[in-house]
Structure formats: structure tokens, C-alpha cells
Amino acid sequence: MSEFKWWHERSDGHGITTSVEVKLLHSEKSPYQRIEIYDHQSFGRLLVLDGYIQASQADEFIYHEMAVHVPLLGRERKDASVLIIGGGDGGILRESLKHDFVTSVTMVEIDQRVIALAKEYLAVNGDYDDPRVTLVIDNAANFVSQALQSGQRYDLIVLDLTEPVGPSSCLFTEKFLTEVVSLVSETGVILDSDSIYLSQSGGDFLQEVSGDGDNLVTVMQRTKLLPHIEVYHTNIPLYPGADFGFFLYSRDGVSLRKPVKAFEGRHYNADVHQAAFALPNWQKKWSTVQD
Image (cartoon, rainbow, N blue to C red; front, side, top):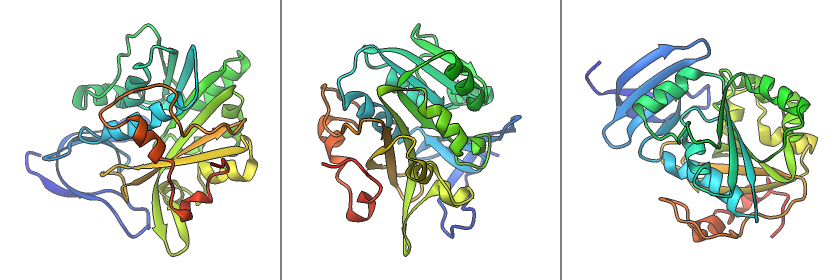
């Protein structure tokens, strides 16, 4: 257990994988998934769920900052409410709480052990004791159905999901998306994200490779539950291919590419915000929001 050994992320037949030389610090099988914590000499500690890297201490801030600050700062918002579905490492929660205009953050995570282990080993989480925070340990589908019945609405819904091979698999469906869409405020957005590959057939997504050939982007394109899709991207070194896409689903199609407030993170700034929407031609086809 004390030696560093080569470990390979699962590829599910894609023919390419991420390999890292790591030391195993912890491994357990929760009621929902295999949870592993590894240590890497450069990236620090890694959270791995069912064979997929979820976060590393070295680069997690890139994903979490870009996932939160772009949709929250791309449009004037007051008394904003955030719903996080998944997000067990706590990074999305951390970044959401940095804005005073965010008055409530609800985080729904099915696996309490992911939260506990990420907090113990990675320590990248936000403050679960912040009075604005409501932490719910439940299946996201159950929570969404109950929130729908009680008339809840959210300005930003972040789908911070694992690949569709574990407890998240039931969420990559038209039924679930239909209910989630009903929780978005009139000016709100749903944020989805995924690793992007370029193959001979065009752009591919990790969700398609690890699942049954569908992903949330293609479901939303087909159903038009929210008719407007705006795309931006960034580079995250330890995610497959390093090219990582973010997808904003909205009702009114107002572009979020220009920040309305000044904010500086470790990665995020106003220039990075705007530049993230500059897409190569082969990715522009995914966006329905024009310049």
C-alpha cells in the first residue's frame, strides 16, 4: 500500500485512458459505488468513483470556478438560489458561497461517504455549516420530485454528476430532465458538463462512451425541454483529453458570455470568462445561442 504504482482510469472500450503513478490511501465499497482516494506526487490527492477520476487537489479549482462563476456572473442576479445535484467533493458548494447575492445553496448527494471521505482527504469543500446551505442526502430523482411538488425554483442548477455507470445512471434520462427543467426559474440556467474528445466521426463525450451512447446534451437537443444551449469550455489537465465542455440550458437564450460583475479566482477572471466562449468550429454546432 505504501508504494506508488501505475493506475489506469477505466476506458469502457474507448481505446484511450488516463494513467497516473499513484499510491492508494483508501478504498471502500459504499452502498452505491466504489470510492478510492489516491495520492500523486504532483497532483496531490485524487478522488476516484467507480474507476473514474472526479477531482484532484491540483486542478479541481479550474472546474469548480468555471462551473459556478460563469453562469452566476454572466447575468445580473439578486437573491440567487443554487441547486447542486451531486457535487460530493464540495467544490461547487465552496465556489457558490463566495457570492453575497447567493442567498441559498441546496446540495443533493446520494452518498454520505463521498462527502465524508472527500472532506477528510481532499479538503476542497465549502462550509457545510454556512446558514445558506441545505445539505440533502438522498437520491436526486426523489429530491427533484418532492421539490417540484412544493413549487421550488432555482436560478442555477448544477448537474455535478459522475459518469452514468453508478448511482448517476438513472439521472441521464428524459424523465429526470423533464422534472429538473421544471425547477428552473424564468431567467435561470441548468449547467451540465463533460469531457470532450475529437474522433474521426466528430466530437464525442465521456458520458456517451461510459453510458449507452446518449448524454444530457443530446437528450436536451432532441427534446428541446429548454430550447437554448450555450457552450463554453476550458482545459482541465487530469480529465480525459483535458478539453472540458460546459453546457448552459435556458428558456430565454440570453447569452452569459460577458460578466456583469468583477470577480477574481485562482483561475477565473473576466477575460477567461469571455474567452471560454470562443469555440472551434467543430464545437459550435452544439450551441444554439448566437453571438
